[in-house]
Length: 432
Image 1 (tube, rainbow, N blue to C red):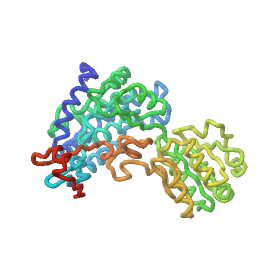
Image 2 (tube, rainbow, N blue to C red; image 1 turned 45 degrees about the horizontal axis):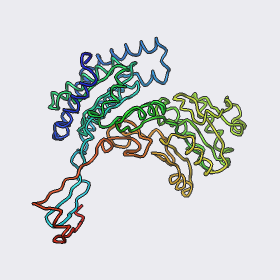
Image 3 (spheres, rainbow, N blue to C red; image 1 turned 90 degrees about the vertical axis):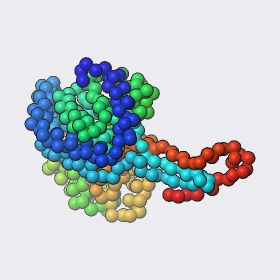
Image 4 (cartoon, helix red, strand yellow; image 1 turned 90 degrees about the horizontal axis):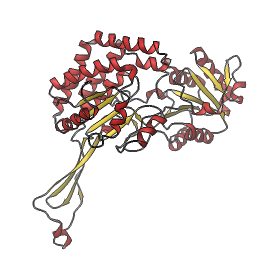
């Protein structure tokens, strides 16, 4: 791929996208299954490439959370291959009828789902993200141009080559997948509005904003994960502790792990000591406001600073704050959060309903861990990321988020002049 320019890669993807959009579901499913088999067949080569990436990243001082995301081991290979096979078994999103209306006698309007075309995805150090993104694009009939992090270059290259070769052998058009490898190619990618239909950047808010400000291509931002867990008055302390530990530590580098714990003043006495103790045992360092510190005797913690309420630690660090009411908790989440996923622990139905209605996030949970915010766990097969905006997709972005739609109108010599002259009238009868 090194001898092919970024523009040529994007142009090939665009040309392939038309054939891919019209490809039968059976072919795309076969490509997914072939890709899974091929990845398993090259497992040791993939692990060796990843080991080289890991060694170089460690030597260069890559942060621990990023190193964890970079690692691609047998468990991750098993998971991504299972994801590809799950995608193959799912209903085909392409051509799905969304609307059907009789406009007038003999005229039928149908709206059907169709692929976006060419999706450009810029993602962080996770090699498994490449497999998930490529798999979703294959299933949804989209061509894809991928740009991973420099730290995962060897891993991404072998995963890309393996998947592309298997998918093309299964019948998909050559060039439907492209891989960019240099930082300079990101800027080139942003100018290719004649080839790329949608860009999905995965990174910090500043990075996503840079992409939005420097491209005419529509951008769907997947950025920070500043998620909250709120313990309401009268919550079950043991349930709260169990959820808090999972939401913080199950995978600390994930964007859906919590970064702030909010505790209602009436829950602080009975719930916070138990939750803080459980978090301490799990190795979590706490940064608490003054009121919270007094309720955690024997638990080491630092005083929270203003910047802690906006921090995405991606590490075993958690900010803790006491609030006077559920309204204050909601206001804090809407102000300092990233509109990703936020949860309440409560036995009160009215409080849960208020929290769900007023928290402005893509995912709002009751009595469960924020770590469930995931395309695979939602049954979407996988995800290209989690959209924290409101257009056109929100939350874990799977197959539906990668589809647009087109209107098909069928008639028999119909002309607008007949309607304008009153010779014919519209019926607008809903058929679906």
